[in-house]
Image (tube, rainbow, N blue to C red; front, side, top):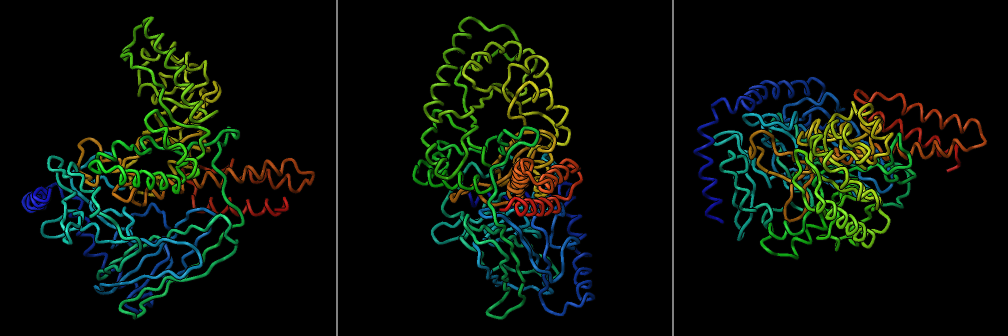
Length: 602
């Protein structure tokens, strides 16, 4: 394995030298030229604003459409401002700041002083495909993009000059550091070696000292998680920035913990339904993990457990899939806290191969009858009265739907939902036969597309594909997978797909790797788009709680309380999903929640 590492590294020098001046690096070349001008301008601008110290700081939103490079002026930030955060009990919420240095300084230490559990990470800039931040489609060349949230920024080495542009993963073996080239052309992709699952590729358990570069910004991501019973109020603290004991900056913190915990999300137009915040492929596969860990089942199970906890901590409450091969993990899911009221499962029926139509044969029907009965008995035993959602086919044509309607009928006998991701042809030829619907389309256009399915009785109804996952932009991820579709009647986010790699953004041809997170021996790694998934669901949780309170207010004998509830409903009804400021909406919902809680004597 070591020989292959070294071979890949050696080939890097040859291959990257051949492309660094060519058309493939057009985007990176433009970024380099931009930085030459902007970095000096940013330093001058800060001095003109009165900054005299060697290090300056900005309070900035944790999630933003602004792609924060080291030369990007934080137009949405506050120079010397307080880093603020408002969150519910037991909620994970992030706040952020950027440091700017007028010189190269290594060994910078950051210490958080706050009376709440927290986790500080550095936002790593690394090379991604030329369409990074923008799209899931492949494009030539590489560009710098912010994405990884790391405790040890040196886990990934980014080479900009010489043999660059290139990313290398640090793998420690026998006390020595080896570097795997992870931005190689597709034909040389090293991930078949499974290096990312070795003990040597691991992040630190806390933020290590960082290096600040001359005239450059560096972003930090502070995630706060108060316990369920945390006393509400404002907690003040600071982040001390120092080097060798000398304080360079002290960043003020102010965190408000609200006097409530958030419920699981519910639908908007279907208030009696749980909102399924999910993503295709998010459930870990133990067998695959055992293979990745070279047969070490103990390590694989540890990673499996950490993976599930990460999904839950990112509010992906309905991402679990249960089948015959992993029913053993149901107690673990319950222990972590996953709601198992609606669960993805297997229909256990053989594939008939009627992709282009035809008629089910008698033996097909018997297979369907036996499989439906078996499926029902299995899930009753394992999950009780949970609603089971099973897929059959993917983006199938109308002839397929016609050929399989009798199969779907057998599952309807047992209340098991069969669905198929796809387009409107599914509705025209068999909408009544399907139980749920992952819709190919945009969440902003979901209302009219989802209406007939909703009126037929389908549940859940969600979207995928427009666009697929892969954009590193966390605020876009938040909008697309959150309250935008919720307002338009969706009861599910179920995009394609929850990819855990590739670390190499050049590994594909037509599409970029549709990455939400990355996996190593410790479980799922943190990224800014993964944080966007969490915020998407938490926006819906706040809205769900606001509507719960509005329902309670509607039953009040006090007319003023009833009117407050109506005002809350009106606020949500008037939101413009595509253009609303998500941070402002969150704060408005919190204000209305607190107002209603007060009026209801809570």
